[in-house]
Every structure is written in structure tokens, then in C-alpha cells.
Amino acid sequence: MEGNKDRQLYIGIDLNAARAVISFYRSDMAEPKEAASVADSSRQEFPLAVLRMNNGKYYSGEEAVHFRPETEGEAVFRDNLFAIALLDPESPEKEDLFRLIRRLLYFRKHYEKDREIPYDLTITVPEISAVVILLMEELRKNLEIEREHFRITDYRESFFDYISMQDRSIWKQDTCLFVLSSDYLTSMRAHRSISGSDRIMEVVSDRVPFAPEIYEDDAALDQFVAEQIKGALAGNPVSGVYLIGERFEGDWRHAVMDAIGTNKRIFIGNHIFSRGACYGACRMRTVARPQVRYECEYRIRSKRFLRVLDHQKTIYIPLVTPHANWFESFVSYRLLYNGTQHFEIWEDDGNNTREPFAVLDLSDFPKRPEKGMYLDVTSYPLSEKKLCIEIADGGFGAFYESSMKTWRFEIDL
Image (tube, rainbow, N blue to C red; front, side, top):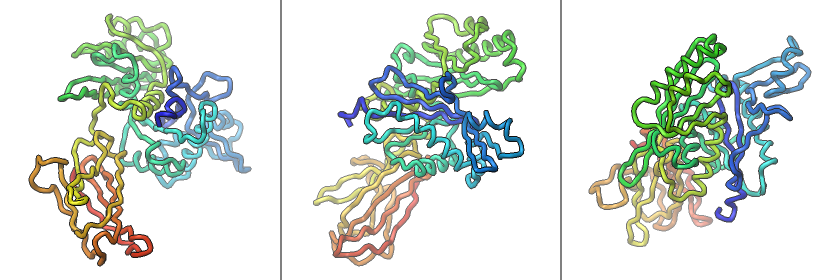
């Protein structure tokens, strides 16, 4: 991978209910770049919309929105595709969403240096849920992307991914983010702490709705946002503030700037989440020991090991990916049968515990001689609290055919 460092393409897609933003990044670029939703336009948000014409024509994104008024009664229009797909995973809008995302990925031809190198894709969403995870796994398979090149994050982690790749002066203390939309203000606060030898960063988020008329009134919006920022900045010192949203680009922010105060680095812009998604994938590929590590409720905090005997030596094989989001941990091994049908699961890989955490008994085990059978072990979390372990009979070449038997266990994390 080291030789491909400047050729690897990282793609981040910010996906919410109604629209998507796609960013592209290589480590030899100064910063990620966004694709425009309309040719020769600075608009970079793609509506998650489709227009299915009765004559068979099909439009998506900005084209669907553009042609809709001209096709009244002659077509079916759908928007908010991501929201619909989450509510009804069997709806045709799910396939429309996948088709639109595949279309967005065509823009990568402008940024790829080597099409032989698989691109890394990260999808970032407002919140992670079981339904989101299932939908994104379907998307990964639809796009035919290997697990190692696909990530899911929420906006909090993308915010961390973004600021952790910036100058340390921005996040040496707490860092705050404010995202202004037409009906609510989202705030995030990244707080850094030290746990043993690790520097940890956690992000808390809040969202405050407001009346639509406030958004159009400069004075009312200035006062409302200033009050929210003042409350959000209270507590620990803050070294960096990000103001995200097109509305922040006006000249109405007098009370807002007073609320932020001095001695802080202030940034106004857009698309921080899709860019953070790119940075996060790049950091995972290229930074062996990051300066700071992200922590949240999705992270795997426990350890689980499979203890096996290898040439009279006891070894411990990890069953979860340390510090990964639980929905991204996937471990697989092929072991040579050593004569026992009992597998011991341990909480650590040393002598800190005297008894195994669990013992897995492979019932109805086929009769095989020692070293006459491969066992394929797969381990993946079902949630932040449950781990699934599957052990399959892998046969032994032409000598012993597989019995096709698979043992499945669930243990606590």
C-alpha cells in the first residue's frame, strides 16, 4: 500500500434524507474536492430524487427536479430516497437510491490516477441505526466493494475525522461545530482527554429546531444563533469553531461573532462531513499511530480471543477488531483441526484471567483424524453487546470433503 500512497483515491459521501454530497481526495491533494450537481455550476448538493417517465425515460438528481414541472401526470416523481429506503427496505426507491449513488461514483474518473487500485468509499449519515447498517451493507454488495474498502460513519465521527487532520492548534482544546439549516441548528462539541497512554476525543451533538420565519429574518436569526452558540461554548475552553451552511456566508452575524468571542480560530464553509469521510479513510490507511483516537458508543471496548494450540504453543487469535465500530469488525481465519471439538474464548491474550470466558462445543462433529480437516472461523458483532462466531467444516482438499456443517454461537461482548 505504501507505494500507492499518492495514488489511492478516497471518496466520501454525505447522505441524508433529501440530498447527497460527494468528495474526492488523494494524499497528494491539498484538500478534498466536491463534484458539482449541475455542469458549470458551484452547486454541490445532489437531490435524492428520481423521475420515472411513462415512456420509459428515467431522470435522477438535479435532472429529476428540473423536469418534474413539465411532466405532470406523465411520470412518477420521488424525492427523499434515503428516508424512504430506511422506512421501507423493499420499496423501489431503495434501488433508485443505489442507482443514483452508482451514478455519483462515475465522477471519480476525474480524480483517479490508477483504476487498478480499488477506491475507498465512506458513507457518512446523520445517525447510525440497525436499519442504516443493513441498508449500507446492501449498498456495499450492490456496488461490489470489498469490506476493507468500505466504511460507515455518522456525522460526529466525520467531524472528528475532519478536525483531526487539521493543524493541532484547532483541536488543542475543545472544538465546536454549528450547522445551520432552514429549520434547525445542529451543534457538536469535540472534547479531548487522556486515558492512560491514549489521547481520546469524544463528540457530543445536539439539535435545536426553530420557526421557519426566523431563517429569513437576519436580525432574528442572528439573535437566535448567538444565544445557542453562547450556551454551547460554555464550560471547557474552545480553540476552534466551525460555522457550516450557506446562510452563514451572509453579513448578518454580528451577535454571533460576539458570542464566539476572541482567542478562537473560526472557519466558515460547507461539506465538512463528506470531506471528513475522505480524511478518515486516508488516516486509517496511512497513519500508523494517530495523535488522537476517536471514542463513542459504537466502538468495541471489549476483547475476545480464541485460544488454540499451534505446535505445542498456545496462541490467542483476536475475534474482534480493537477500537473499531462494532458494525465494521469482521474477522475470519482458517485453522487446521487439532483433535478437539471444544473452543475456548478468552477475554485477554495473556495470563490475566484463569478461566475462559466461554467454551464452544461443536456438537455432531464429523469423524476426522487430527490435521485432517480445516475449520473456517468467522466472527462479527451483531450489536455493541453481542458477538457472533461461526465455525464451518472446510474439508481437507480431495482427502476429506466438507460435511457442509456450520456451528453458530452468540456470546456477550
